[in-house]
Every structure is written in structure tokens, then in C-alpha cells.
Amino acid sequence: MMNVNTRNCRSGLSVFFRPVCALLVFAVTAAVNESQLRAQSDAPSQPAAAENGGAPVSEPPETRPSGDPAPQPKQSPSDPVAEKKRPGLPSDYTPPAQLSPEASSDEEWIVTIGDGTKRAVDRARSKYNRIRNEGRFSEPGDREDFVKYLQWKLSQLTLRENLLVRKNHEKLRKFKQEVLTDVRKAGSNNRQFRDTMLELIVQETPNLFKYHHLSRLSGAVILSELNAQREPRTPYLPAARPLLDLFKQKHQAPGVRIAAARGLRRMVEQGQAPDELAEEIIDAFVDELQTGNKQQKHLRTALVSHLGHFRRLNDSQGKPAVPFALTQVLADEDESLRTRSEAAAALGRLPLDNAFNIELICYEIVKLGHEVAEAFQQDSMQAVNAGQQPNHVRWSWTFAGLYIAFKGDSKSSVSHGDGLSRKTFKPAFNNTVRDAYNQILPLVQKNLRTEKIDPAQLNQIKQWLQTNLPANKKVNDAFPEIKTGDDPPKIGAKTNGNAPASQ
Image 1 (cartoon, rainbow, N blue to C red):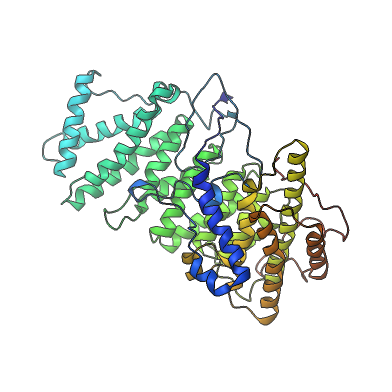
Image 2 (image 1 turned 135 degrees about the vertical axis):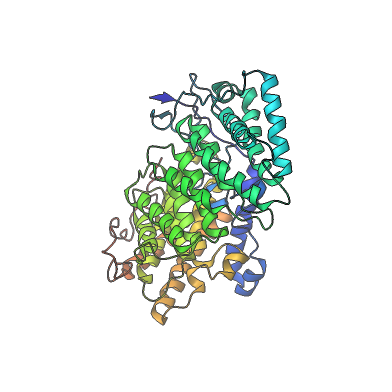
């Protein structure tokens, strides 16, 4: 087994706190005036996209610890790779303490140019830049030399001297960004050359996927951020195939698969991916949720979020596999609370109608709200006993996910019809949605106001759960009943609950 660094990725609290506050103010405003809610709902569901029009580097529902305690920092002396910010990953993502040889390798990709001297590399760089700027292969051997230097540039992302020495980390960022910048600069008046360069990058970049896990991560980010044209910046769809192949390799490090999944989301959301490709991506994400490792909570949280943002119901077989998979995650007490909360938000983004068991979905959201509230109360109690203040911010996105399930999270999401409360169902379902939302909103308000949740409120939720048991546990007639946890808690039972599953 191979030791890897496990230092927490860190980012400024303000990057997280601003969108959290905006979103939760959005929630409280809803209770006062629904029309003001629509006017003030400007909390972005995604921060600014990565440079070069790439997929979001960090999106709110996945960026900070919330319903699950933050992983403790660890240090591996034998492989001190540490980055303050890993592009394409949640900021609190921590790689496993150990990775198998299949997930990370000590080998290097050695590409030698000429006699290997700096002078030879400089000459190759000069020729590469000339070809790129001219946008054509004008001399014999130009294409071969161009590919050779591209391979050399990518190979620098696998060199141990760059991976293990902190002062050389800037080189990794530089080489990765240069590849993307080269595409922008390539033959401004020659679309054919730009297409050729994109094809070469998609052809050569997957060579990184057998080396160090950070090399694989760099390759996934490069492919994810390739653009088919300068303006408007739309994803280069041929890059989806190697990204999908990478994602399907379950032996890869979770961080690598998260980066690949985000690239695939960009293909579907921004690249107008054909239905066949979008459905294949959906199949892969659903399969991972159904058969993957539930301990990989960051990966699973990312996948449920992506499936919600696709706003598609069906898999490649034409069955509504997405709402089935998301409801199963929502109800599964073995999943982390954070992942389940994101599944609730994702269900609110789907174009559900009366063909789905809305009563079951609402019941499971409220039941999750009760679990989250109890876990938060217990976490707060432990903090007070240790002489500390309860950490409301850490739980904010878990509470917010419950709200988003009903109301959406931004003007853009409202325009999409996100939120169960914004959809049109038959009267019985509409009543259930309204009542379920009324159980959830006070919990979100208490978290926003940093107030203790009233035990009477938890008892009221218990009563609601007792009297609103769904008739069956089928999300849709196309699938069997989902597997759920225990029956609703008994009235008067203890309200301190359990800590998050991943604690």
C-alpha cells in the first residue's frame, strides 16, 4: 500500500459563509413573504466557474463540512504531497491515508526531447509555440515535434520532484494551465488546427491516468476544462469518453473520480451532450450510488448533486432510475447526513409529477430533518460540555439541503421550477408538500439564528411522521420498494439522536 498525504484542503471561511448566509436568509424570508422570496433569491447555487470556462472548482453544497464532522488533519511523512487547494475537489476533501498500487503509482512518464538538455527543450518549446501561433503544420516533421513537446509538457505532471517538493508545486499548476492556455492561443483564424490540437490533447492526456493520483487528478481537470470554441465557452464533448472511462474505474482515488464526475456534469449541463451520452453518464452515476462504497461520502455527495442538476429522470433504458436512486440515498441511514441532505435537494430539482410517490419523498425528507436536528443537538451538547460554542456553520449546508428540496436555491433554480413547492401536483400531494415544508422550515430558521432547537418542535415532527406514513415505499411503479430505516421515532423518545453516520 502506498502512503499519501492527508492534510486537509483549506479555503477561507468567507468563501463558504457568504453563500450560506445568503441561502439561509433566502429560506427565512420565505416564511415572511413568498413574493419577496422570489425577488431576493439571488444566492448562487454555484460560485464562479473555473478559469477558461471550466466546471465549477467548488460549489456550495459540496465545499465545506456541514452535517458531518470535518475529517481530522493527518500527515504522511513518506509522501508529503500537500496542496492548499486542489482544483475540482471539495475544499474539505482529504485523500485516503493509503491508496492501493492501482490508485497511485511511483512511476514517472519519461519523455526525452533530443539529447535531454535544457537547450534541446528550449528549441522544442520555440517550435511548438510557432506552430501553435501560426495554426498550421508548415514543415516536414512539424506534427511529430508538436506532439512530442505536448507529451513532454504533460509528463512533467508525473515527475516525483514536482509532486513531492512543495516549492515545485507551482510547476504542476503552471504546466496544467499552459495546456489549457495553448488551446486558447491556437491558430486564432484556423478552426481546423484548433480542433486538431484538442484531439491531440484528448489523445495524450489519458496517459496520466496510470501514474500518481495527483497526476491523474490533473489530467481529469485538463479534460474537464477543454472548450470546443473560444466564445461561447462550451465543453469539448469528445473529452467525455476518457473522463467517463476514468470515472468507471472504481479503483481510482475518490478525488480523481470526483474531478472526472464534475467534468462529465459540465458536458451535460453546458455542452448540450446528446441524449445517448447523457444517459450513459446517468447510468454510471446511478450504478456508483447503488453499488459503490458508502464511506466515500464526498464522491457520493457530488454524484447526487450532479444528478439533480441534470434535471433528467430516465436512464438509458427509459426508466426513471434517477428519482429511485436519489430517494434510496435519502432514506438510507448508512449514508452520511450530508449526502442524504444533498439527495433531498437533488430530488427537488427533478421534473417530478403525479406518477411519483410524492408522499414517500416528503416523508423521507421530514424524517431526515428530524435525524439532522437530533444529531445537531447532540453535537451542540458535546461542544457545550467541552466548553465550546456549538458550530452552527458546520451544519448549515445540511439544513439548507432540506430547504432547497422544497424551494430551490437561486433565481436560476426558481426559473427551472426547482423545489417541490414550486411544482404542480394533485391536491393531495400539494397538501403533503406544504405540510412537510412547514415541518422543515423552523429547523432551518433555528440553525440560521444559531438558536437551540426546541424539543417541542422535534416532538411535533415525530407526531407528523406518525400520522403521515406513506401507503407504500415505491417511488414509481417501474421499481420495487426502496429500503428504508426504522419506523418513525416514538413520541416522547429522547431527542438527542445519533451523530452523523460518518463520525
